[in-house]
Amino acid sequence: MMLIFSAAPALADTPAGIAHLGSADFTKGGTNIKVPVQGKCDVDGPTTKAAAPVSKTGITFGGGTSSCTTTVTDPNTDATTTSSKAEGKNFDLSALVSEKGPRVKIATYKVTCDATQTQTNAGWSYGGLSGIPALPNPVPEKHTVPLKKPDGTVLANAVFNIHDKPGDGSIALTMLRINFLPASKITGSVTVGHAACSPTP
Image (tube, rainbow, N blue to C red; front, side):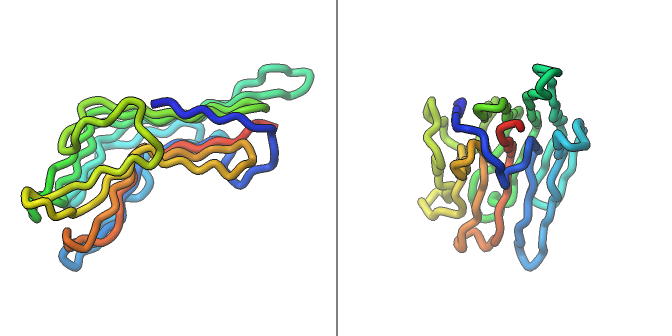
C-alpha cells in the first residue's frame, strides 16, 4: 500500500507538503452536512495540528494529529527534505444505514508524503476497517468498492488509493473518497486521509 514516484524536480502547483485527516460535504433529506478539513498541517505552517473528534448527522471523524516538517540536509546548499503525515482514528459513516446500506468504520488510518530534491513518496495504511469487504494487497489505484443495499442496489462508491501525479515530480494522495449515488438520496462526498508534496528546491 505504498506509492512511489520519482521525477526530476520542477516548479509545481502541488503544495510543498500538506496532510490532513479528511472532510465531508453532503446533503441528505434537504440538510447539508459539512465537516471542514480536519487537522491540516503544512510545511509552510502550521507545521503541526491536532483535531478533536467531530460528529455530525451521519458521520464522525474521531480526531487525530498531523505533522509537516522540513529538515535541512546540507546547510551549504540549503538542501532540504520534507515529511508530511496525518494519523486519524474512529472514522464512522452511518449516513447510508437509513437506506439499508452499510455502516463504514475505520479504527485507525495514516497518510504520508515525503519529498527530496529528486523524488516524492506517498503512502497510506489503515486498521479496523468494517462495512467494506477486505481490500486486496496491494490496493490498485482508484480501487472502487460499491456500497450496496442487501438487494444489490449501489448507494455509493468507496474509491481507495486516488493519486494525482501532474508530471512535475509532485504527488497528491487521497486514501479514500466516498461518492454518494442517487439511490442513496444523498448528494456529495466524503474524503478520508489526504497528503501531498512536491520536490524540494
